[in-house]
Structures are given as structure tokens and as C-alpha cells.
Length: 176
Image (cartoon, rainbow, N blue to C red; front, side, top):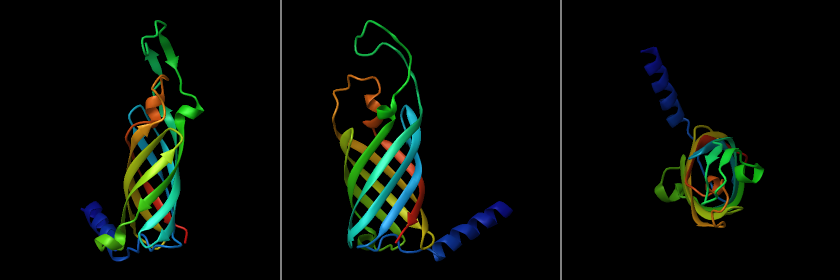
């Protein structure tokens, strides 16, 4: 029972003390969290700079810490791979991105829903995310990213790592 009461208190405090998630020009929002996807998991970091009431640009990077090694045949190669490990360029991705920040459109100041497009080292893609700020400087975020056009022809074993749907969640900070 104590856990339920504590949880309800924290939720109600967070809702009553919540702050504006996106104010527009001059905003600087930083997200740091976990990146989850098929075949690996890692960390994601992003920064978004407000350009207008509902528009921002930024950068995002991911690095996969845990990646499944590959064993077996790939693309009709007669030689099997044994415990093949991904290299740095297979684990790392960086992207520039633009967002449409919709907190003022949906009428909830504490919640920023942001669909957008990204151009990265491995693909052109899209994303949809959300941030909720409990205080002026701290909140949580979640984001789903997906490729639209891939730059490779999938001839490498680990091309799929940066060319698939990803899910991220973590902490968000206001650096304004």
C-alpha cells in the first residue's frame, strides 16, 4: 500500500509541477537515453534547437553497446562466418534532423510531440517522439525512428543495425 501511495504522490506532484516542454525560438533540449532495436541495444543522445514556435533542428547519435555476433552464411557466400563482430562504423550512427514541435498545437504545454525527418550516415529517415517536463529543467522522452531510404545495398553483414526501426527512451533536459 505504501508503494501505491508513494507512486500516486509522485505522479500528482509531477503533473502539478510540470513545466512547458517547448517554448520555441531559443530552446535547447537534450535527450539522453537507451536505444532498443533488433540485434542490439545501446545509447542515444540528441540535441534540438528551437527556431520558431513549432520548428526545431538538431542532431542525434546512437552507439550500440550490445550487438549480437553473426554466425552462419550470408548472401550465398560459401564460406561461413564464425562469431563475426561488428566494427565501430556498424555500431555508430549520427544524423541531422528537423522537427515539428506540436505542444502549442495540441494545447498541452508540458507535452511536446515532435514528428520529424533525419539525414544520417546510413539512411534518410523519420521519427516521432514525445517529451514531458516535470520541472523547468528535467523531463522524460520516448522516440521511435525508422528508415525511409537506405544508403547501402545490404551486402555487409551488419547493414541492418542502422537501417531498421528503433525505440528510445530516457531523460530530457532543458538547457535554455
